[in-house]
Image (cartoon, rainbow over all chains, first blue to last red; front, side, top):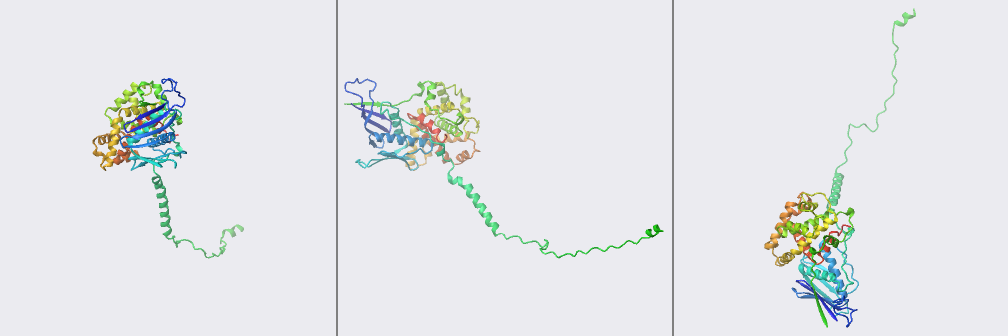
Length: 226
Length: 208
């Protein structure tokens, strides 16, 4: 029995088609697994207002959900989330266009596929609706229950300074330049000449003449001898 | 045979117990179990954008706190004001740190208000796109201009102009408008099915 699920938003509708691999014809329709999709046969995302669509199979849906999830977190925090290389085709990427007025979603299919590349451009509200249908899909436990939303926090190491590198370099460059300028100016300034008042390098020898001593003339000595 | 199942997810926060609401948000390991000033600043700016979107927003925030029975965490108007003043950009910066529960409640309030205001937010974002497509100044759009003006007034009256970043925003009107529009986009994302979880995780990007 084919099951079709639709997740609806004003601009975007995600339609999943598949079946439950464990259901049998004899099973009661209202059992626990009612409406469960465990095998997905097709996924289609239609943008009603801009007449665009993306479609694919299970890998397409998983990759789209993961990429949209990461990009939305990037928009919220302003920090780059790891857009890890998707191993399996179709490879999906999101880029901002025209100063983030629009977002371009590119789906690169395998060489075997008829359509090699799918590209759509979404407005902000369309992108938000796409994110919301993806979140509705994640929240629905009856659609591919083995696929779940994994929100991650970007490490502190990957956080860049709020001030751009060019601005942070300004003090360093200014300091270096002023030091170089000061050094250049001081190089041009002539060395000071030695002053005339300074003592001569070869002083004249001074003769060391002993002073002549003269005995004192006194009458007192003779009178005492008497 | 084909069976069609249509799903419209509508997460109603008001119907669940307050402990469950707080538990919906993951406990992200923080240094000293308190939020960083940057997280506090981002939460307060989100609430500031909500206030610019609707008149009497602070009353509605308080009503939401009472409806969700979160008064154990935020007891009333003064407590809410004190918590919002943990934003380091504020004139009346209290130099306090938000606990995880206090931050959760503030984010829940912002998300609830964003859900109620979603049609208006969508309209403003679409209008911004149209004005830019036509190369017209966004101030020419009445509702956008009203939102931006209210945001600028709130920002100028409440933020400390002696802070370099605040002074730069106050001096440059277009930069302040960009901040307001960026917050509008964040509020739109908050209003989504998993908006609460998304905004909560995004606050901790680059913090751990």
